[in-house]
Image (cartoon, rainbow over all chains, first blue to last red; front, side):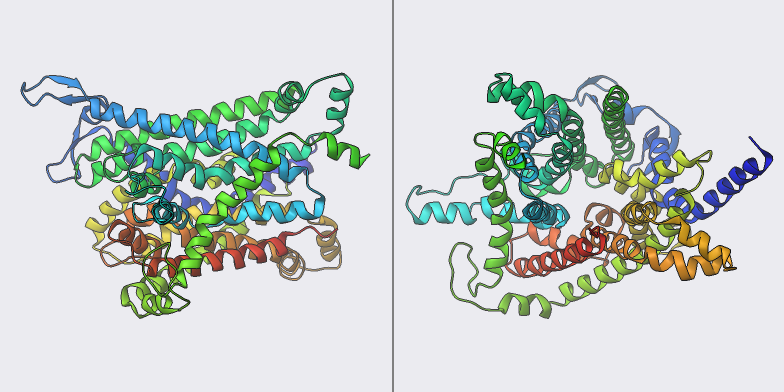
Amino acid sequence: MSPAEETQIAQSARNGWLLATPSLIILALAAVGPLLIVLVYSFLAPGEYGNVEWMFSIDGWRGILWTKDIFDEGKFILADAHLTIFWRSVKLSLMTTAFTFAVGFPTAWFIATRSPRSRTMWLFLITIPFWTNLLIRTFAINEVIRNEGLLNTILLKIGVITQPINMIYTDGAVFVGMTYVYLPLMVLPLFAAIDRFDMRLLEAAYDLYAGRWQVLRRVILPIVRPGIVAGSILVFVPALGAYVTPRILGGGKNMMIGNFIELQFGQGRDWPLGASLSILLLIVVTAALLLYVRITGRESAHG
Amino acid sequence: MADRAFSTARLPGFSAIAIFVFVALYLPLLMLVFYSFNSGKAIGVWEGFSLDWYGTAWANDAVKAATLRSFGIALTASIISTIVAVMAALGTTRRRAFRGQTFIYMMINQPLMVPEIVTAVALLIFFAWIKVNTGYQGIGYIVVAHSAFCIPFAYLPIRARLEGMDRTLETAAADLYATPWQVFYRVTFPLLLPGIIAGMMLAFVTSLDDVVITLFVKSAGQETLPTYMLGQIRRSVSTEIYAISTVLLALTVAMLTAFFLLTRKKD
């Protein structure tokens, strides 16, 4: 490397850092930095009226799974209520991911096989809900399924039912809501993968006497796998941390982990527990993202 | 050839599912729009066209204040995040890779990866501490928080635009004795402008949509439109929310259309 080139690199780095500094300051102040404080808080003792006592304690972390026995001071028992919430969060997120894939894949395929002109229109139609306020979309579902909502009103009017069906404030309602709000996140990466798919491979497969099911399973799905992984991660990650949708459609009883975290900073008044739950959620989400990087990285390395 | 590929690409049932998905995506939203013009209150019962709910919403001082606050925050946060994102994009694009570049990417994209509730809790703790120590209770906390999570949304379109730009124009300008500042102001900036506007619009919409982080960061009396709406949904639902939703929906569609036109590649 010539000295001139070395100066060029050094200058490039200096200017790069200099220009990125304002962004980095804002992000350190209001995004990354505060996360470190959460980590610290997860190892402090809870204060009496919220906040924390400044002394080291693992009560926050222990509180994730165990709770103090109210009858026997100093004894800890497994916190069933917490486990129920974790299980509901994981179950609903996985169900949402699976179902958005089941209907999102045909949708993405449909868009990718349109003529170039109408394809833009269909893509635009998927993008609008994607950018529409999540609160409004959840509210829309709320208005369809609540007891005095559109669905019950119509069913009552045409006489199919005599009593409104109670759909809202159930796990099912949260599932429907999350599927509705996160579906575009599945369709868009699937579309990107299918768009690159060489349709001539289909002809080759059919020429070699593959049936439709075989073509789908042995040709299409393996090739568009990076898109499947991307879509699944993009749906699973926000679903696991969902707050607004379970709050509106699940009511107070059908909490997910996001609502449970909020509870610790509100009525629960256990900031260290809330902090350790936040870190736990962050770890799970980061693990999912790393898995994604590994899978897609390996695939691009091979092909 | 294209025709044959098209027919083999047909998979049974896929089109039907796709159409169902589009109908299911739009029906609830269109229902909100439709009933926002209803003169009655009950959903599923059409009692004639009226703009009453828009009037009710606008006559409500809480809605008016929340709307103005939301737009003020979104405008400020999108301007701040776009300015710093332009700088960061210029610093990290089209130059030799340098040590720490990956770190900068990770920092900038971090808000996209961390669950909102975690950031919200983190900011609650951090800002509560600052509030106690400085006594400042103002709107600044929300603006800073929004500016931070808007940065990646502003950065990505700007960076995409920069990467697609022709470097030789800048070299030519420099060869013609333009100072670096002149090169930026007269060449780079005008070429980059569509990306900047696109980035700013995404940042604006992102800020306007935020519920979770605002909910945790705001002090008393600092309701934004989404936090106000969330509070209303909790109570008995009023049809004025339909009107507010419709306006926000129309705004999103208008902004997205503009965004598409701006970033569309010229064939």
